[in-house]
Image (cartoon, rainbow over the protein chains, first blue to last red):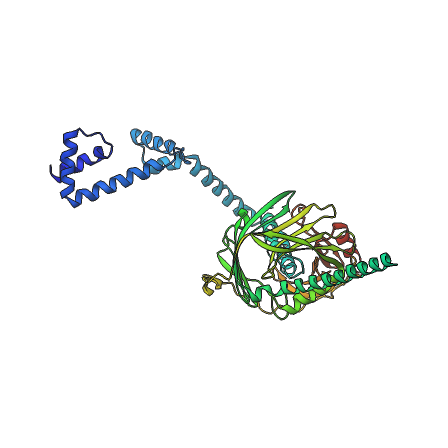
Length: 160
Length: 313
């Protein structure tokens, strides 16, 4: 038994699928070889961790992308041409082109409007923050509750 | 004669003991205001409060190093996950993960954020508007506590139930209750450790980007209008300036010692209508009058807020 042969057998040894004679031979070799001993230990650790993983489906379905690459690879279409044909690239490109054209023709016709400051969610969020600061120092009040309330309200205003 | 004398003695003892208990309650409250100066602690707190028609529960960790350093890390709900509030003496900062920057929290006290004088002042005002009595003893987070109950002298205000640690006088729990006894919001420690030996002062320092505090605000360029109507027990306790989108606003604070009404005023152009606001998000009203936008929010009903706004002329 040499290290090359032992390395091929370690996985089966961990799975307990070796015949008795090979198992004894491997064990004798590992007892004298620190390199093969460390390989055996790391293999056991890896299999142990893999065994502890839950049997749940992957959150991302990769098969569709893999299948597409296989199909396109078989047809022989260059990758750059494949990308341009995809709706995810073609649609935004067309939209951007249309927007640029619209802006080009529109900017020369519309008179400038004076800028108008528009307050809204940010203004109310500022008021909520200021109010919560003073709520914290009121008597018979938990100072943490106004902060929690303020953050929830501000988060809702941001989403509105 | 003997029976009437005995009854008189009992009545006198009941009145005397009530007076003693009342004095004890005030003393317990005074010690509770000073608790942070006398004890360090680390604990997990939970708060339950109504929001947008439902009930939201928040979980957060509080670490306090006496006399005046406090760090609060919020874990839930998701809108608060990762938010950290630091208090170091008179200075305070808040970290919001989405902004990735520490933002200074302006002090609301002209002296400092947690000055005992302000707490004493607020307590005195609160005792004018609330009757408070000790109603028993309970355990919170494994700690024996006094249970105090504050009932409002004026109708329409909620009552408060307060749990105060009997050894260190730290407020262990607080509950706001409607007249029916229904809890409107509550918070309490679920576990706590007093005077832990391993609190490092380094955790109360900001790390990373820190936003600079706003420079001195420009003066308010309009005449502040004060309302002629206020709900019973409320009085003006402060006027300050805040900056909203680079516009200076006046912030008038009205308090009855326990509940706060904020009245914000700012100048507007051409009587522009104020932006709409979903009434489920917060108890706030907004309106415009004579070139000013009024925004009011607080712990009173919307009808009361509208009455206050209407009286500001």
